[in-house]
Length: 93
Image 1 (cartoon, rainbow, N blue to C red):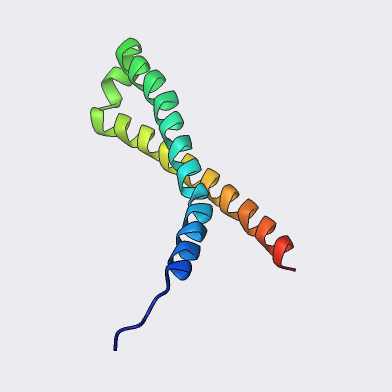
Image 2: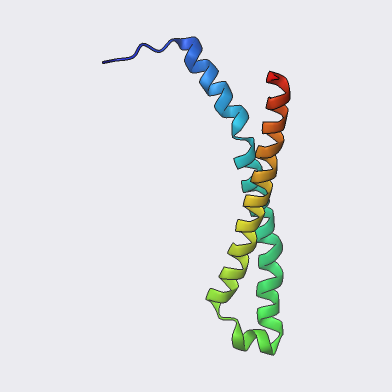
């Protein structure tokens, strides 16, 4: 059975999706900044310090950078989503 969907309903859903995607976008931006902020010192130390040159292979360096990016993404996305949820709960109450 085909369900008739009005144009207004689709516009409302699109507007809600745009409002709710701010957490994902903010998290992605934070992940990019964290990646750059961790990659530069990690790879520089890998070149300069003899200990790091010996014990940090490329996989370890990539793991350090990706862990920092992942943590930044989830922390910022979670904070943004909770902030939006709080704002929406006060609007509808």
